[in-house]
Amino acid sequence: MWTADEIAQLCYEHYSIKLPKRGKPERNREWTLLAAVVKIQSPADQACDTLDKPVRVTKEVVSMGTGTKCIGQSKMRKSGKQDWCLNNCLWEL
Image 1: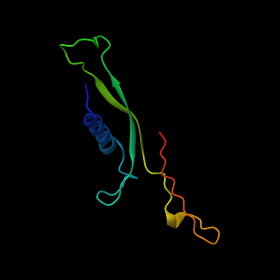
Image 2: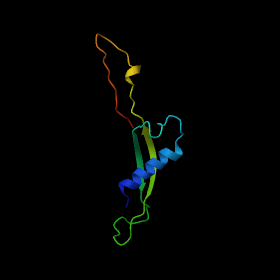
Image 3: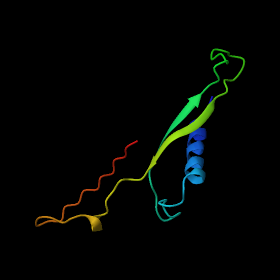
Image 4: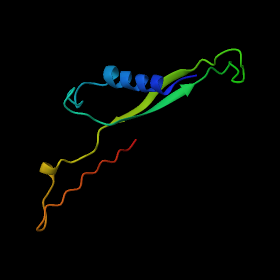
């Protein structure tokens, strides 16, 4: 079996080690959102209904996305008599 903390650690390691530093937030100053798809697979020859043995699985990050997809207020166009600002904080995977 696996825990949420194990999955989170796997994703964080992938982000920290396998992705380039370019574009990452500055530590203790900036932040970003992170989403990942993790493939969890048990060996085909191992029965899943065996109660006396723990099921061994492999975990692999197969896709990862980061960022807030936001446009800062200073970069947005001002229109009309009032300043209107919309920050789009959705993420897509």
